[in-house]
Amino acid sequence: MAKSVFLFPGQGAQYVGMGLDFARRYPAAKAVFQEADEILGYKLSQVIFQGDEKELKKTEITQPAVLTTSMAVLAVLQEEGLTPDAVAGLSLGEYSALVCAGVLSFRDALVLVQKRAQYMQEIVPFGEGGMAAILGLTADEVRVLCEKSLPFGHVEPANYNCPGQIVVAGHKRALEEVCRLAYEKKARAKMLSVSVPFHCRLLLPIKDKMVSLLENIPLKPPAFPFVANVNAAYLSEPEEIRASLVKQAYSPVLWEDSMNLLIKDGYDLFIEPGPGRTLTGFMKKISKDVQAIHVEDKPTLDRLLTLMEEVQT
Image 1: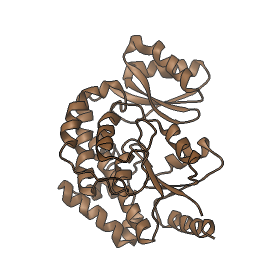
Image 2: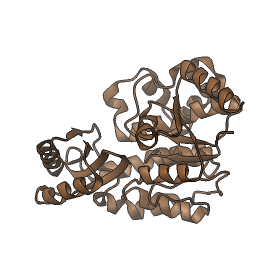
Image 3: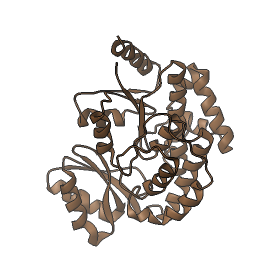
């Protein structure tokens, strides 16, 4: 019997039209999008399904959009009788994982991520910060490039995604220098289409706002094991989780370590509910000994259900 983990994607996975196939086919998915529209007070679903790509990339829209789409996919999986044995989420996806595990309500998570996004954008003015993916270097090599680029502004590793892929965050000019140095080492580098330097100390000023935002939000113990980004460890106490969500905004995401912890503990089927297949791709680079599959529409759901039949027999 396979031990499954639901992995929830973060910002960057979004695209116009995500979740539309499920919303058309499954009332449970459609209801999630309708609930999001009601909670937020505007037609988020319209932006997701047929909006402008540039608008969808705005942080304060992207974050609730990705969360809502993941929850719509989750609603269909639950109708099919699929529940995970553990959960994790990358960055923003951690909020999806916590809703899945019953720690947060969907309503509270949606309001939280919208406010979180607004606070993040306010801290670093638009155009001054960002992120870049460095491909083909070790974590230590990337740290050295960041240190060499500090004369151009602050920059540091922000996401340890998988072997050979480290995302750095910081001031735009320093990011450009890291990319230049990476090219010199025959590595690949790509500036990401985000306007906020997530998961680095430039966002430290968000701490007090996140504390205030989270202090009155009710949290419950997770219904199944939850692995946190900030320390790649299981958290089960609500107050530990609350503290980790504050710290997560300005701390590196230890994704590869988180996945290795789950693999070590015998989890061998990793399912990515939500837009894209980013986390599925990471898992295939982290381990060849586990199965990873994404689900976001009817064809991918059918593949998942076929796979579940195979692993349960």
